[in-house]
Image (tube, rainbow, N blue to C red; front, side):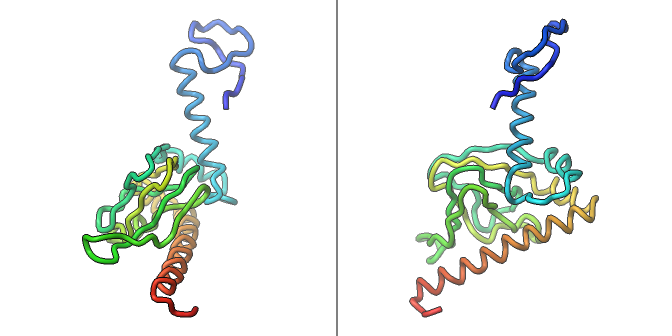
Length: 185
């Protein structure tokens, strides 16, 4: 998405419409605008009051993961929160310590990965890996927790959204365990 807008070229002389792809300053402008658009349009943030988006943009980045790449590992510090733009991520749990994993849930575009970053002791309860090339908006957990503490209304809204993720993951885990044990629901 390249937006054409009225800007000053690097030389400083106005020349009408300039595609902001010429020169490093304009590339950064495109990247920031795309970054902001991806973030604000993610369904996780539906109906978020607009005044909170600047808080989010400050602690967000875009990351890409290769198929098979581990994103989070159970027991490790939960330092990030992920919103999937495209691709698929498998939430996994060890079924025999050190010998293998079962997929609890596969998450895709428009879904969120992780809730452990919000609650002490801030350690992952599941592992996750990309099952195909995946792109996600990634938030620094410590920065997000700080902003939630500094702005209680934002923190409350964020906690409700993350609570929704927890509920979905607990339900998916229950269904998966029933499938594995072959117990009728």
